[in-house]
Amino acid sequence: MDTRRKKKLTFFTIGLIFLLSGVEYAVILPTIWRYLQTLDAAPYFLGLALSAFSLSGLLSGPLFGHWSDRTRTTKKIILFANVFEIVGNFMYFMGYSKWLLLSSRLVAGIGTGAGSSIFGFLTRSTAPEDRATVFAAVMACRQAGLLIGPAFNIFLRLCDFHLGPFVVNKYTAPGLFMCLLWILLQLAVVFMYWDLPPLERGKAKESFTSKSREVENKQGLVEDEEEGDDEGKPLMGSQELAGSYGSVVTPNPTRNHTCAVSNATLNDISPPLSPVPPESHEPSAPFKNFSVTREFLREEVVVLLAAQFITLFNQTALETMVTPLTQKYFSYGELENSVMYCLCGVEVIAGFLFVRWLSQRVAERVVLAIGLTICNISCVWCLVFLANPLGGFPWQLTEFIIGVFLQVLGLPFVAVAQVSLFSKVTAERTQGFSQGVRRSVGGLATILGPLWAGGLTENMYIMMGVMMALLALLTMMLAFSYDRLVEPAAEEQEESPENCG
Image (cartoon, rainbow, N blue to C red; front, side, top):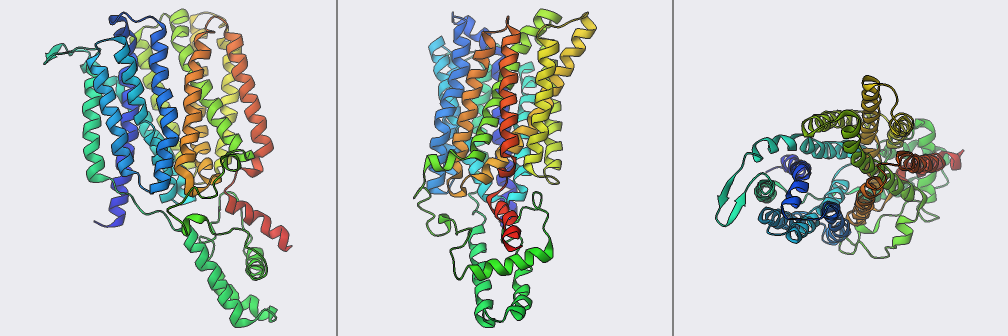
């Protein structure tokens, strides 16, 4: 089988993994509260069960990412992680006690840690200019799972029979259903997933440098005029090898050519600006000379991690607030809420598809700025109109619909831009671990967001005010660090004309 077909099947399998993660969330969430009630669980058990899933994923993500960075493989990690999903969902199906149910979500959550390995794999196997497009497609798959998940509950709620010693009803059926789906996914991973070799950008840079030096040796450093003409030939096609980032930098061909010649000359008398990354020489030791503080306590990385935390914190807080709000003002039941979530899912998928198109035409930091602007507008709208809705029923419903629409609209922009930029500003050789840290920050936000909103449903101004303050802080961070939110190679390319001028 050729490499191109293997890559398509591998990416298709990754899409299935994220699709199932969305389906699991949408299938289990609507029934878990009633399920816990049948087991005489206290109300706080719902928060524990939901937080347990996020907590175990938060802890397992960096570990799986570290594993994938060391071994440069993801297939066996995915197979291993899926075992936790299978066992966890079967425990959920058994449901003998509330403690078993809590443990089931804790075990299943470990399986979500494989996502960090997958994002690391995607970073290593895609070109920087294609990364946002790929990430948008993967995230859209999860949203598609969230959208079609409720449809499975239509027939799962009709289940009422015994399977050996186990009872299959509308509460236990989702666990059995997801267990079977994860088993089928194991087969898909075995037969349709390959550990593709990473793109060898480091070697490309090496060959480019050696070619430049060979030309210099032939022509001589003193023949300045002839040297410029002769070196133009091997340097003409060097844009891709040098890792240009066209969406951020608009190159001047004449000036770039002069700078390229100048930089090639400087390589002989001073260390190169962009040394070959260690992975090209030591693939088995990606963490050699690695420093957590040096990697993550950088301005651009802190901004992107803050974007991950604040946007997910606000999103989950608003999701927690929506159901009590619709019940209080519109008397919505399960059907109305399901329709609302379905429409939101359609909007999110459309948003990801639009961002996928937009990211091919503008820089990721522009996409991030657009998304953050929409989120600010949404939060201001919710603070003004939803904290204390005014007017009659039609006006209140209009206020609510606009607020939810704006909030959902901004999510794809921020989500895709920050994960794509994060993959570019962190070291590629430790990408799995870095993505695990990023997802752990997001997991912490999904734990704290519902806890914050759940305790302040009667104090909407406080809840929304803090969310608005966090967004304002993030906006200022983005404004001050905007120039640094580019791929390092692109940053050097921007600086080189100034040095040559």
